Image 1 (cartoon, helix red, strand yellow):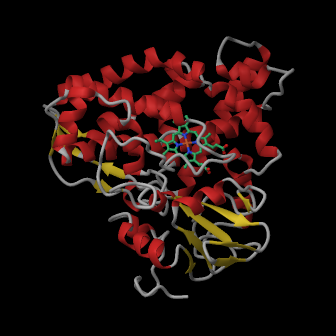
Image 2 (cartoon, rainbow, N blue to C red; image 1 turned 180 degrees about the vertical axis):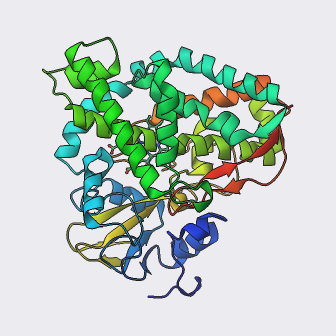
Image 3 (tube, rainbow, N blue to C red; image 1 turned 180 degrees about the horizontal axis):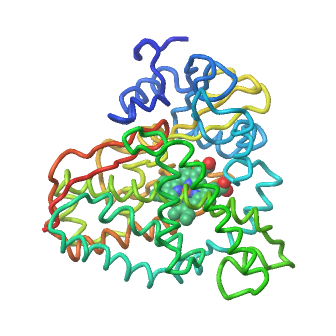
Length: 410
Ligand code: HEM
């Protein structure tokens, strides 16, 4: 049914919308009037053989969908809410090799193995190395005087963190970074990365990771790769499974954290009171508010496994259900003054890392650590950082991305 508050043909996954803004007023209108709303689409435009999807906007409903994998599958149509009209069904199905697009019991098995690499202890063990990297990144930016905060600062630490996590030798990192960047840029024509280049980069990254896994299987070292591929007794990943896991890390851990950092910097620069507060008190609550404010992943999707009801809507088996974290994170039922950037917000039950349930972000504490380290380094070294222009946004159907943020470093 058309929503009176929305223009005809409005689509909550239209990349041209996100090129300019996140449609927060439109989400608010739906939360008030039709919290689970059918968004009709021209047939097949998102790459699926259907005519639209449900838009789930309330915090409670996003949690409900996320925590019921029996009713809402991540595997049937993957978690990605929009590909494009040219993608084939085979190309969609192959995405199920990554855990984000698996259901139990396959998902449970892989998750149990890989979460060994993300224990609080494993993340803490990276802290000293990443702190040094954050300081070096920010010091190099200061030398430049002014520049693009996204490329100078925000991009760098997430890439280093993943390379550090999986133990990529220093001499291979430039190649890994290049493949990762090419893989995630395909939706924005200005970045001039063709789908073919993106796909080739993904293949090269997978094959690099598979070789690394095979080498560690042969000759285990004291690193996470060895723990994931060589621990026979507790179950392990085959080399190709490890390859797809690294691919997922490069996508899931990179652009998300980069955008949280870029949006966080922009929020501080446009809310000078919060920046002064941060520099003075460094509240431990800041990183979570930055993720809520940025909500780098606007939405993922599930597919109903049987007929059901949600938020007053009747959902049919096989229909796609979009879970809009960006809307949940601005739901006034849960957040007082959600439109206010408040780095002391506590509690802050945001859904930026997912709505709970089996797929909840594996890298959550690593991401929070990275955000914390970057802003501490910026506050120490670039306390007078200033904005030098409006941010330029990424064109994407489901990422809230900034691709350029011009600043003067001091
Ligand atoms: C601010 C940064 C980040 C944000 C906003 C973010 C967000 C998310 C979201 C929304 C999900 C899906 C949750 C669901 O479907 O229920 C997810 C899953 C995932 N994230 Fe993150 N993420 C971030 C950083 C990271 C980092 C640094 C890593 C690892 C290096 C990572 C690894 C993963 C993995 C492996 C999954 C899939 C988990 C599964 O399917 O079981 N993420 N993330």
